[in-house]
Image (tube, rainbow, N blue to C red; front, side):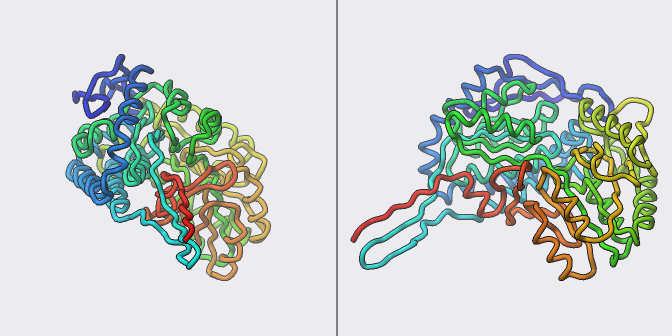
Amino acid sequence: MAQFKLLIDGRLEDGDSTMEVINPATEESVATCPRASKAQLDKAVAAAKTAFPAWRDTPIAERRAALVAMADVIQANAPELARLLTQEQGKPIEAATGEVYGAAAFFRYFSTLDLPIKVLDDGPGRKVELRRRALGVVGAIVPWNFPMILMAFKVPAALLAGNTVVLKPAATTPLSTLRFAELVKDMVPPGVLNVIADANDLGGALTAHPDVNKISFTGSTETGKKVMAGAADALKRITLELGGNDAAIVLGDVNPEATAGKIFSAAFQNSGQVCIAVKRAYVHESIYDAVCDELARLADAAVVGEGLQQGVQMGPLQNKMQYEKVLGVIEDARKTGKIIAGGLAPEGKGYFIRPTIVRDITDGTRLVDEEQFGPVLPVIKIRDGEDALARANASAYGLGGSIWSDDLDVAYDLAGRMESGTVWINKHAELDPGIPFGGAKTSGIGSELGEAGLAEFTQMQVINMAR
């Protein structure tokens, strides 16, 4: 069994205690993981604070080169990292491999960016410049659904901007991140990148730490509120990418079978454990039955199993708590709608749930109004696009959404009035490292990715000089 260590001040070290990481497909231990103490968290923050001035003053070309080197080592070790990811997270090995390569691509993307001085005015009476300065120590907190790719939303941007980082993966999926840290530890000076693992007990201490200047958090809305409260006393900079209850509005002019296939993929990727998965499908009454039938057919045909097995399309839920939550949502949906596929938890080990389609359900039910974050999709009948838009916008969430129509003018108009940070037309859940991503309403604050995401790791400074 592999040995895992924390990375603190450029050195690999044991945790002050240990914890077991469980494979959600087998409910057996994958490995014993180091568990950091509060003292080790403080040590990591102190190391990052000490390393910050020299890293901030390192030429950006050298910081770019470090990101490229990290991308190279992620890619070179993709098979090992992907296998770890499948064992701790549960997703099929093909999806895990894609996530690892995606993380490398995100590091490469950020290595291409710059933070130039922008001259806003250069007239006879004054010269005005806009600069972007590093903030200091960044606390990066990553969830369990995409440990590698969401790490790559944060770490390369923070490092390129000249910040130092204390990275905390989720308690149930720390292994691939710790192995990443071991692989890249010598690519930046000691203290620039620190990685700790906890049992969900150090997030508050990291968020409120007086020497942490920014928190970048991805996770649930409720935890995001706690992060915001913890950062409030020091008015820390925060970026919050939180929950979503993405609506797909399907108008009556589309091909029902083809559209159902695309919606199925967007709803059930990673067993539905995706912040921007389709979580509610609003389907026009004229094609409602056809779409429901095709979704049910695809759900019944899906291959669910242990992620290292060939041909598996969907793995288990990642942890027991989420598994039990989703089962509760399904039981409630039996009373408020009609389950036409799935709704079952196979016997035996593992947190498996068959992909589940629920029709004849409407707003005001738990499955439609809450974020299920699992392999369950409600399909709601609508009269027209305006009816669907009003229902979609009634949600407190606003992360993503999509409009499906062969009339692009109609789709474009509806998209512009959808209250979501991202709206896709005739597709869903497409992310690109060069396109900013962030939520509206209770789905988040700030943005990640793209030049806008890089700017979130900086302090704007204006120099206004008289002539």
